[in-house]
Structure formats: structure tokens, C-alpha cells
Image (cartoon, rainbow, N blue to C red; front, top):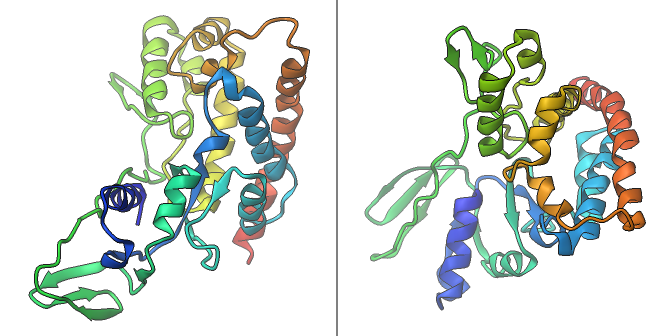
Length: 282
């Protein structure tokens, strides 16, 4: 039921397969980014920046992960396939409104856990069994997209070994490039360590909230090292840079939006531990 499954559903429907012919085994439901509101293109500067600010605003004021999810849904940053089902997972999938509408056409959704095995005439799941017609086509979308590292994960700079971990959510390529830059241009070990806190992959919104603390700490560390900051500002793999193309000193409204990120980030850093604590004591 992850992004590959979502893409498979959309692909089938767009090629003329009736949604009534599709059975979707969906052991989990996911929160999904709304594509139209997070385009990294100058033409969508205001929409995207306001959407990202809504994320920080939520992180700075909500008390629980549930409130955070609802706030992002209300702001248009996240949406979900079934409005009647509360998603418990978040893997940063991105879908447009049109793609979401196509997925919602599939009414035959099976929520009896993961498939254990498929045999002639039946499908065995964790919590049930379903009879099958002869000649069914199965599309396997069960491969895991990312690894959640344990607390024993080594540092990025580990003696003579580099571990290519994520340093910013959902940007593994940028993270790898930054690690390479630090290895080549910044010999100071303390600076390297400060700039490379692990931003772990995650399964749930709560885990994602927690990982944002390390991401924000990395961001601050990068801004304090001139050579790193200058490199990031010219790196095409850094997603936000694409929004800034063509920005002029006369774009006062856009600069006013950008100036809000600093205070909002500071407030979010102060509030995230409270969200995590509230979730831990439930």
C-alpha cells in the first residue's frame, strides 16, 4: 500500500482497467504529500513556501502527533486516500489530486494484514483468507523502500569509512553530495560531526516529527560554516534552491515569507520535544 502500490493503481486505471476489477490489499494507510502544494519551481514560490511554513507552524504549536497530522491535512500539505480511515504510516509519498481521485475509485480494499502467501484459488493474509478466481493477475508491491537504522548506527564519518546516511528528510542524493563535500573540503572532525546528524528513515508520523529535530540541527550547523553554506546555496540537489531562481531584491513579499522561517523553526525546535513526550506518556 506504499507509493509503488499507489503508482500501480494509477497506472492500471489510466490504461483502461476498471476500478471494479481491482482488489487492493492495503494493510496500512498512509499520509501523502499533496503534489500541487510542494512544487520546487519559481512559479509556485508562494504556494510552496506557505505550505512549508504551515508545517513549521504546526510543529511549533500542536501537542500530539494526531493534531500535527490534522493540521497538515487542513493546510493542504498532506492528504489521504480514504477520509474515513485514519492513516498510521508516513513514508513521504507524493500524489496529485488527480492521482488521489483515481485511487479512491478502487472500492474493493482488503485490510486483513499483509499477504502471507498465494495459492491456487486463495490468498492467505495475516488475519484472513480470500477466495480467488482463476486467472487473477497479482502485482507485487511489497518491497521496502528504505531502511530504518537502529540506535547503534555508526556516525557518517567513521574512521576511514563513510556511511552515506540521510542528513535531510527525503533527500538522499543531496545528503550524499554534502558528505562528499565535507570529506573533500572540511577536514575538521568536530565540524563534520555537527553537520552530519543522522536523519533516519521512518514509518510513522511520530517518528518523522522526531527526525525533524536532527534535520533542523544539521541545517543550523551548515549555516555556521561559510564554505558549507556557500556550497549548499549553489547546489542543484538542494531542493529549495530551485524556488529561488530569479528572485530579485524588489520581491519584497517573497523575502517577507522567507524571513518567517527562522522564528518558526526556533519555535518548532522548542515544541517538538513536548510532542514526543506527550506521545510517550499516552
